[in-house]
Amino acid sequence: MPTSIITTDDLREFKMELLDDIKKLLTNQSKGKLKKYLKSSEVMDLLQVSPGTLQNLRINGTLPYTKVGGIIYYDAEEIQNVMTANRVQHGLNS
Image (cartoon, rainbow, N blue to C red; front, top):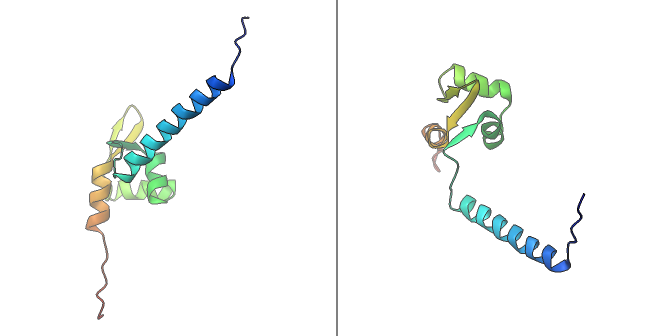
């Protein structure tokens, strides 16, 4: 089995590439760019809900979804629309 020697320059180059990738990810997040379709686990993390709550949101029609080959996908834009439509605003003089 051939061995390869990693130099400090190699590590420095790897570090710079990794930092660039992280910066790109953070920039995309700060611009509000989300993936077009999210899996159930991503939606649960995003909305901070349990699997049961997510299932209830699907069953009662609150969250539209697409099922492909046993995997459930949610459109990120539709999730944002549901959040906006269900926003509760309290008046300052209420």
